[in-house]
Length: 127
Image (cartoon, rainbow, N blue to C red; front, side):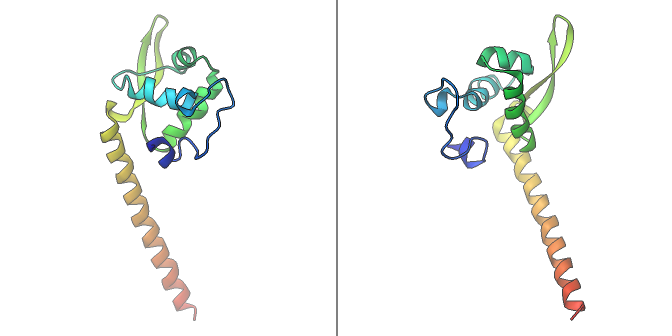
């Protein structure tokens, strides 16, 4: 499952809630039902907490994991009190979001390689 492969849901995840399976868990439902199921829509933390019947702290924990992976965009959500910050799959499209992630990983790997080569060169000069 993609969510386990990318580290969003840990392997062997055991929901410590009423959920009997991973598919009933908050992180799975947040990603599949909300973010992927309505990729065109921005969701506020309050909306997600209400829909998934959990706390805002739990939603923030899972949103932050996805933000750290660069899979989410911030989106303005219009509500009665005015616009609020919300979240959605980057570009409203998982495939495009993943292309963004891959590009960032490639750049990071290139930078790591340059750093490793530089450190190696410095260590050889000290000999």
